[in-house]
Length: 189
Image 1 (cartoon, rainbow, N blue to C red):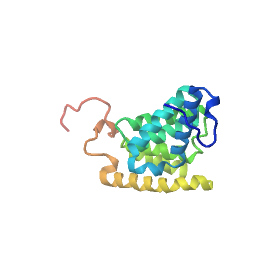
Image 2 (cartoon, rainbow, N blue to C red):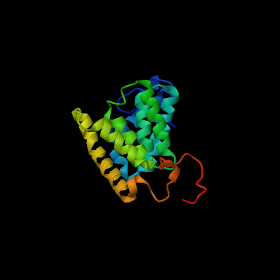
Image 3 (cartoon, one colour):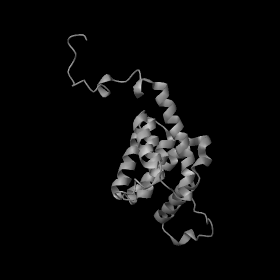
Image 4 (cartoon, rainbow, N blue to C red):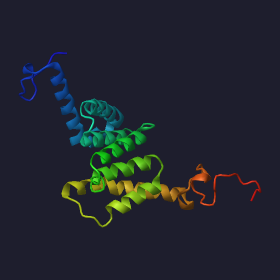
């Protein structure tokens, strides 16, 4: 592939690796600036972003921004297992800067979205109530509240649909029964 001059940048003066890294950064920045523009083709756009962000994380493994962005891409793609990968990236991002995640609305929304996709609706609701209610946010963070409100409505609808205290029909009673000590009930009661 031949290199082209883009945006007045003289690509001829840099190596192929630097050129490739610059293209990766530009594509990732485009996705991060406007992820909603790709909503028609979310899986292909999110998959491309995940690939690019993963390459970036190989080079910069302790980049909280790249981890958060990849978690967002996993959540947008919604393939089987993506919510778990998103939680892993969120956990790593929070571990890189302890205490920061509790103040970052975008990270809280990503965390709650991943929990919601994993059918952990009560945990998602608790997280949103604990970290969002009664707090003040900047103008940029308030833009994220639009997505948060939609997420809250979706979580509440899922909890209402489940009924019986958030316990779904296919759920294991071992997860919810406080009286169950792990042994089977032999008496049939």
